[in-house]
Length: 361
Ligand code: KG4
Ligand code: ZN
Image (tube, protein in one colour):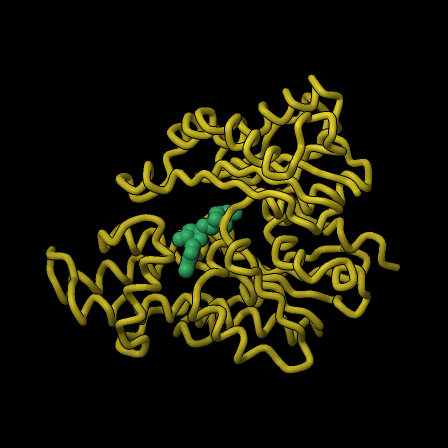
């Protein structure tokens, strides 16, 4: 049994976890800073870094203790989120992990947070699913605070990004709306809760880069997203109805429900188009926004019967280190050691490979 310690600090969660053989969670600790950032309506990178630094050591020690590990040397590997994410925040986790590795001799691997989200959606299905040729091609919709992308994972692990956001991520669209309406941070959960009391058909918010947007769409935007116009439409909608006062009561509920509906509608329509386009046998949905109830329900009702739907379990949608340790195991198995001089990366690099599918012919 190979035990990997995962460390995650890409945004506002300090997380550590020990996972065995890439599948079995032996421990999972998350210290969220959401309360510290709430006053600003979004994450402040330097504040996040300071907070990671404050709790990092105790989060890792708790994760080791819960997994019954008394010395770092009992681990087979250490996996740390290298990017994409907030640079000051990532640096805390990376420096800490490098220190652990250098002093113990336990090898270190650098994990792509975006791919880790996808892995987190698949972990519970186990090796038989990940390494079954019939799982692929798989379409993945990854929607979080930092990303919105649709990609295809081919048999053998090759990855093709079909489309991504041209501006805001889907999670940002939730967070910025909540900030505008002064509903709190993070926006997704509170928008979902508030919208549950409203009518999603009450108002029609724009569906950018779709055929129903009223504008001509370029072929290359078929799978791309754009959410920044939606946020502006919300601002004008509120001004038109409430002037400079904050919306409230049924108007607020209907507005929020309709706004959420516009996001869900665009995400699901483009994803279903990608499923048809790529002949997918599996549809994966991962990332913080995958927690969203209406999105999950819509995917369940519209995914064709012959396509297996792999929705990330709610506890693995938002940032955690279980998915980092899980994917890290595959990098460990492939001996993709991290050089101690390696740096973090803020933006999503060109993704071309999903390591867990590597063993497939
Ligand atoms: O994956 P994640 O924890 O962090 C990033 O990698 O960015 O995603 C956080 C995002 C936030 O934007 C948050 O508002 C959104 O996920 N989120 C949701 C829900 N829960 C979290 N969005 C919609 N509905 C939810 N229930
Ligand atoms: Zn994330």
